[in-house]
Length: 445
Image (cartoon, rainbow, N blue to C red; front, side, top):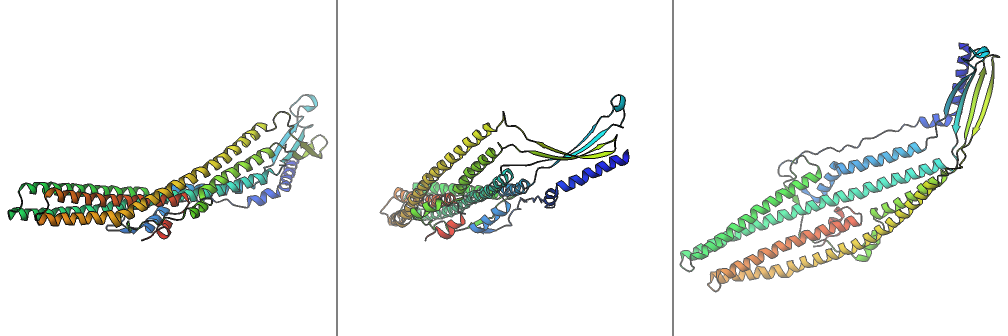
């Protein structure tokens, strides 16, 4: 009896190997799961100076958000391999006419059946699943591209903010130096009896304000450095200094040119892929309405006569009640929603492009007017007031008012320069470009 059972089991195993050559071929293809590291960089050594290009390269090496999206793209690639797999066959074992009564009380009348069943997919379902998985992989790569631009834009904004903070500290140092020199002139006039002693207190107060402004500028620079370090994923402080020329205004591109570039941006492409994914999902959902038959092949052994016989089977689900109609309707509505979101996103991107371009144009014009007209006039006014004060033509109030005006317009100039650079970064981000292209292509002297 045991020999016969071994014979049946061996036949079943042979039947299994015969029926699944495609599965064995596919199983030979390994799927390797790669791990994308996201190390934390250590602090920079003392007196490290970095340019925008070097800072952006660091962000590509250390930012964990990019690691997450890179891992997701690898996961989508692995899913493409999974969709190529065939449905596993099913092996069934059945023993009948045993443990009964009379002639069926033992195993003498047993009928042992080993059966192998394989479901056959119709409607091109496997190819549709693979096509959808490949599109999802493309979407993941596009997401990685969009997020890379977003991260680099964020880092670039903090870079320009730190550079502006460095310039404000320089301006504050100059204010302290000017206030100190002015106080020395006032003290000399007081010693010579050409000015009342009360004027000394006015300029001492101005010097104290200048020193306070410098302390505030120093704190702002420290905060900007630490913020840049935090966004780069550094364990401690950022570089002691960043290198760049804040006074170089971004070049305002022609609006017609960037409007054409907007249509090719990664964000627009990502929305188009989302609509295409919903369209392919609808096609797969419709294909799932087609019933898949199951073919069966087995071997039956009759213990009583010691005979064997083959068994052939066929089964097919009858779509009487569930024809996947609800899922088809849901997939149709999701396709309509994705197409509407794609159109809405294009409208928003175009509106944002106009807004960013106009803001950059306004900031560039204001910075140019400050640099070429307002600051020189304020500088001449201050110099004239200082000279007039030394010669006795003007009083202390005129000098202080001229000095305050010069400080305000120079501070305003730094603010406008920073605004222009930040808006240029945002404009490049909207176009799907790395901020470095702003430095390389959108700059003018």
